Image (cartoon, rainbow, N blue to C red; front, side, top):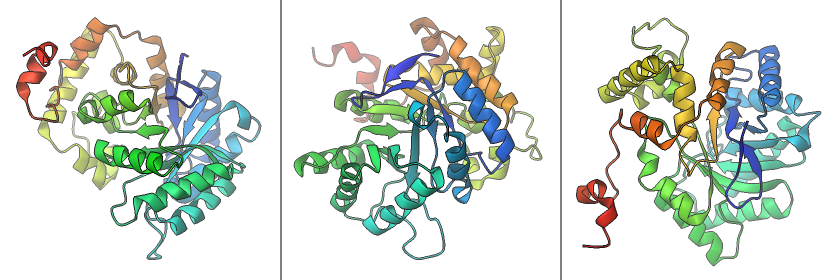
Amino acid sequence: MQYKQLGTTGLQVSQLCFGTMTFGAEASKKESHEMFSLAKEKGINFFDCANKYANGESERILGECIKDCRDEVIITTKAASRVNSDVNSIGLSRKHLMLELEKSLKRLNSEYIDIYYLHYFDPYTNMEDTMRFLDDAVKQGKILYTGVSNWSAWQIMKAIHISKTNFLQTIDCIQPMYSLVKRQAEVEILPLALDQNLGVMTYSPIASGLLTGKYFEKNTNEVARLNEKKYYKQRYTDDSYNETAKRFCEFAKQKNYNPSSLAISWAKSNPSVASTIIGARNKVQLVQSLKAIDISIDKNLRDQISSLSPTPYPASDRLEELLDSNNILRN
């Protein structure tokens, strides 16, 4: 396992982060403990969670897993999603975040959380109030570093501006979606991370299984995310995603790579990315994902894989800059 520095936090994190969303849901408690042990044995020191996963059960199981190794691992969790039917049990208000942070600490059985993510952007809450909450939580020692997940570049930059203007704890890390079929982060989010020295941990490197080839037969009875969750189906409805996945899987076969391992390795090979989140329902899936650490992606191989999907348009829509980027400032 290789390790990279996470932005300017000073933390060294494994290039693979184990996502625990299946803990207590698709994976039993026993299977979850076994997968945690395997991941740690392979050198993973980075574990991602969220308050909404399995209605809090994922945090409880992760808390059990880290009981004897708390100081050796880096734990993340998140808040923003609706957690119950109460009208205020959602968003980034000080009240909701305060309540959810305390619940997460209790479930994780930890005095602190290494990285606390704002899971989604909240257009209804004054962002300064949210940033002041994070600042207070850091000063109290309940969280060490802060992050945002699923935010656009302008939202991230607005949060950074507000925090720096008011001398508050700023954003340390970001968690965008990133895979061969979902490359929008390359346009503004990843360049922003480089410019602002943000730590980047990406998720969904195999596009909810699409890049493994498992959906080509259209087996709607198979236990898999695109068959179970409506929002996953909506995320990957575009036919072009299937075409990219077919090209990728054929390429992987020709080069004697497992598609899942190769897709993860490609995602983590982006120089902006410190760590890529992998998930699994069982040890068999996890073993295949862990093999990504054995694949070396040089520039040539990365370019070959990248050519299998459309390069995202530049934010300015000036396609000539995409085609002739070396001469932008010369003409």
